[in-house]
Image 1 (cartoon, rainbow, N blue to C red):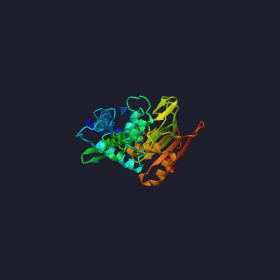
Image 2 (image 1 turned 90 degrees about the vertical axis):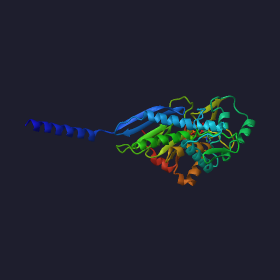
Image 3 (image 1 turned 60 degrees about the horizontal axis):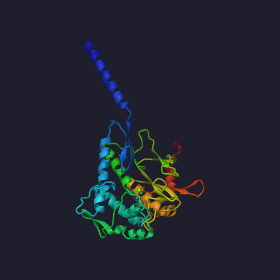
Image 4 (image 1 turned 180 degrees about the vertical axis):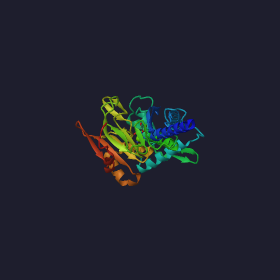
Length: 342
Ligand code: AMP
Ligand code: MG
């Protein structure tokens, strides 16, 4: 009799355990921090509720040690100083190769060698006075991306003044790397946001998509972030380039941090911001910058003529009145959230 009661209790205990484990909801984890001079926020759904903050942080440190211009001992800084025998890592190789591919496809609108001009306009460490046209003409001679290439395990330059700047593409790729880190640990449902460059994984367990807000261009870099629209995505990346958050104000004029490599001057047109959706972060980030250089019309034609890239875009233009003008590709319209709850 005593034995039967014990067996029964054990049965109910095990049944209860089974019930709890079956009904336990996968946990949502949110990890935040700082890297590449910006914030990051990684959200993922994990049945085992693991916390990967240390690993993600160290992954992003390794990343900076490869391609950050703010780290004097990074691979990119050493290449820019023409140090001999610099050992490249896979992060550097992937970004370099992709940068060259996008530079060729966009006929140099995207140019990873635009660094000397970015510096001259005051967007790297010290600001200084605005460059004059003589200096710009001089610097324009040293931004040809065909004067630097990969040869075996090394980088070779035919002009030692050539410098690399991966700031237009690096964030997007770092988001891809965090996404693949999570996938390797069996997590497929995530949203990785590194300074606004976002990579989304599978849908959430309840079948809903990941919601990503697109910022409304504002009058000043410090003003509150307001949302213009919301997209819903899964297994896609979205990146935004704009003239309204990072710029230099001089005599009441704004100078954007996006440089037109043809003129050597900061871009100056009605396109305030462009958001690009692509299959991965590195592609979305690179083309968002390229489109900022091209302007909306040229970018529109580029998307139409380069369908193999699978890009969709949302352009916010200044209409010279108090409103914005929005232009978006049909595929982008399909991704807009029906509820638009912000
Ligand atoms: P993003 O915010 O991704 O558009 O990147 C802007 C950054 O990319 C700038 O701060 C520069 O460091 C760099 N950059 C500026 N102009 C260009 C260009 N035409 N092609 C590639 N990188 C650029
Ligand atoms: Mg970019």
